[in-house]
Length: 283
Image 1: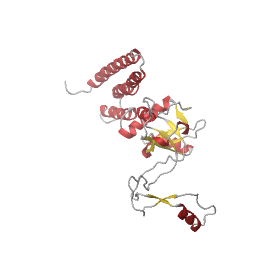
Image 2: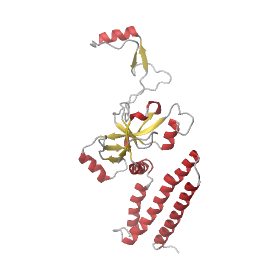
Image 3: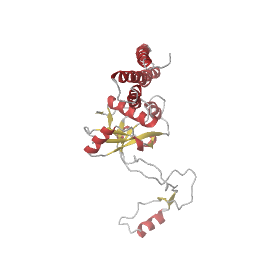
Image 4: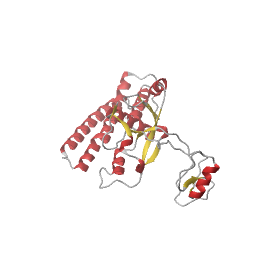
């Protein structure tokens, strides 16, 4: 399920660093301006607070909503907790941020993370059984205790604070694909997790609202097969062609793969149409 991270940061990498908070705002959110307390006053403050070791020498940054606002102020009172987190930005965005396909990395930008909640084994089993789009279960593995990816609590992190060495593991290709499917289902109600569930409802519809018949189930499954093939066409075959263009590799393998996939889609679409024509009322 897990592998050592690649040299390049990628979708599905799991990060561990103290500043990854699943930050969100509520009704009590407010701007918190920062002012620097001069060294002499910082020392006096340390004494007033009766701190055994005082405060560090030098000026002291203070934050308070009572201070007057300042230009370019980014600090905001919010909520959130520190977690392990999995990177769910797409690989094109990640490559752009880190400069993998450019002469240099971008100076700023944000990447999307989903926090990983620590749960008991029984809670993990419950999440697996429910199959909700918003939560993705991860079994424990070597060097990683597992948990639940909370897609409903995604947050963004400044790319400038992120380093490849902060990663503790990454999902293997099969798990990355499953996470991608779940993320697409939650964020956009698209992808295999959604159309497979809707195909079950289609089978019920074709059966007149009762328990799906074998014929209706076969027709619905064929429709889902068309969508599964187009999903792979977009997310794998066409993306591989784009990578070949970026890398300057020969075009033949990418084009051959596209032709093969399109042929599969054509055959599957024809079969799906023929299945559904038996239910059509119009000539």
